[in-house]
Length: 81
Image (cartoon, rainbow, N blue to C red; front, side, top):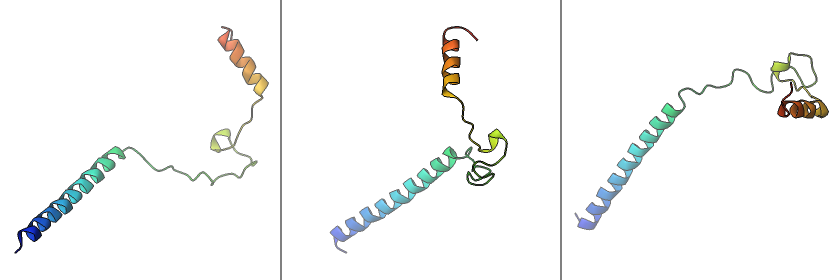
């Protein structure tokens, strides 16, 4: 066997082996990183349609008056309640 072919095959097998090892190590690290992550219980599009009745925590948008918010912020930053 030609030494150049043998050297090429040895390098090729080492590259394939290191690829398999690094892929399995990356998979293991990713799996450990995502152990506490869960998929949401419901889909964002399911539930009541926009403008429908429902509780505020169920995806409905509550609009507040900007003037009221600014008044509350000014009173809290000035030390009042």
